[in-house]
Image (cartoon, rainbow, N blue to C red; front, side, top):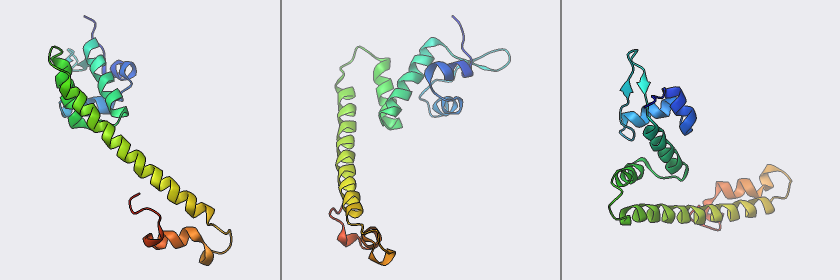
Length: 140
């Protein structure tokens, strides 16, 4: 089996070297074997695991959720109900964030549209930022 250096592991997985070390320190990636020169040596399975973690992070999964998903991946014969529940929880978070960002967008559009391009003492942007009570939405 060909051993892979940490630099090659980073290039192949798309995960930076310090992040690989961090994932090892928090247990998302097992400590790799070491060469005679004490350099880390990775296997193809480690690269796949790193790519899995990178993709999960890109989708916004928290470390604990990724840890749970990896545990599920390590035992492929079990039900996927837990994985579905984790993904559904993330989807709910994303939907809430979209609602919040939509409200924020509307608020910013109102502020910009209300701008009279005059002096600061007449500026709607400054006025609204100074008084949250003038916002259209409470939560943004």
